[in-house]
Image 1 (cartoon, rainbow, N blue to C red):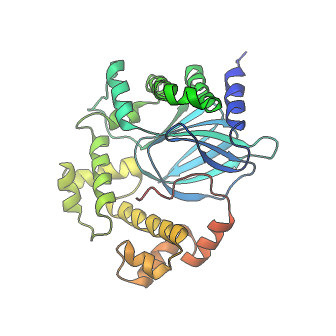
Image 2: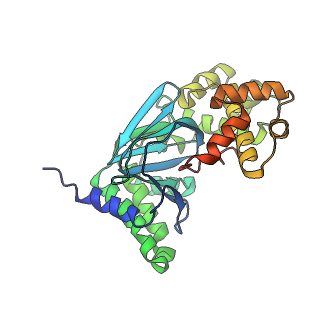
Length: 307
């Protein structure tokens, strides 16, 4: 018989600290607790590198043509900034969707991997930025201890770093950790794609140049295109467009600017082209999309990823 006690304890720990729908940023750095009492609409987002462990309910995430369905006891690992569509699919008032999200500190992750003696396997072929695997009881128990630190803020100030480190260690030991290891392996295709993303995030307001992106990563243009699409589901040019549109959306949401100003701020010269691209990505023109967003629940803190 499977022992469900670790999963129930994990769900109970989260439920104590997030009593309303939404995402709560906790006193533990980069740790978010997420709740929804109902299924949600699909949300387009640039998901920052993170580990997401579901305690209750179900969700699916789409990256390119890949769809990841996951629920209780499953761990979603996002190795680098990934353009995804996320949707809570199973949730109710009596049994809400509950999830832990830990944004990755790549420095701590790298130190943990080095001291664990794990191999990044730099010669492995590139893999998707999103991977899904079963969480071991050790992973769930470490995650539960991390959440329980919220019950004791003085303990959290001292123990959060070491508890996070244990959680990362358990994740790195699991079979589905190859993408996380590859992102830290010098010279790997995954790490070079990560460098391309860093370059695009820094220059997305400028005219696109595949040659410039390739030079920044030390890859040929053909290899860059191929590996970038394998990892993110998009070409570098499409990814730049995602960065522009998500940042424009964020500006309009948070600064109450109009579409013309937001489009110009992210590099569009033509307001009409901006509106067409925006509608194609988000399914509605800017004003209609923003009205929908402001009146709906936003659980995931994803929309700031283009900063």
